Length: 133
Image (cartoon, rainbow, N blue to C red):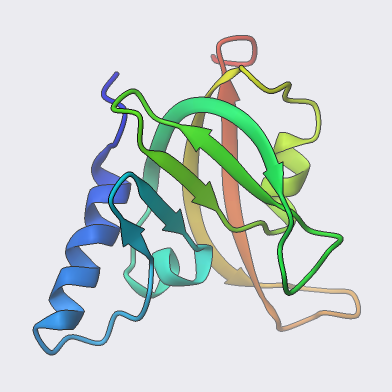
């Protein structure tokens, strides 16, 4: 498996397009760091495998202390920080630091019920060697 795969490449390409007059906003890339945000993946219509990397743990999210972001170290030593959402937080709850993780972005859709009905929800699938099919 390659470490930075087509999903992340599509985010970077969309960001470069925005510099040339497109509408994509701000997945951050600085040297050996990439910040991946579900909202931006959805806006760029990216679906599929986003990354494969070693889970390094969490870091505080300055906007929501109850929903930390997740850190992954890719094979090329790039640090990927993925902004949290409900499905990612749920998928990562039993993953120990040091575990090799495949992260798949499934897209976005409106919630169908509950107090947040109609609000956009982002969906990830988290795979490890232990839970791979």
